[in-house]
Length: 79
Figure (tube, rainbow, N blue to C red):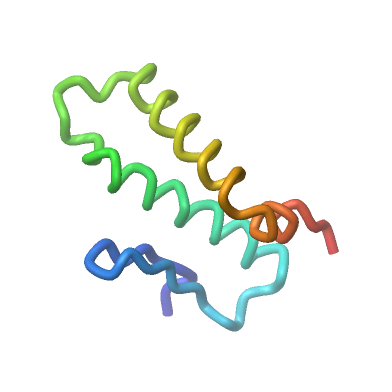
């Protein structure tokens, strides 16, 4: 069974319910990065440089943090 995946067609992240809380947070962050890459058009673009990726990740994470304070609290937990 996969531990998690991002489904672009429905803009959905699915996580394996058997994961520990710590693993769940790590896999969720990983899948969020996949969603940001997808929404930016992926790394197939010719201009997909390190700076381009940093811009995508920076802008994407800033929006996620701004729009989802409870998600940020969840990801920051260390139980």
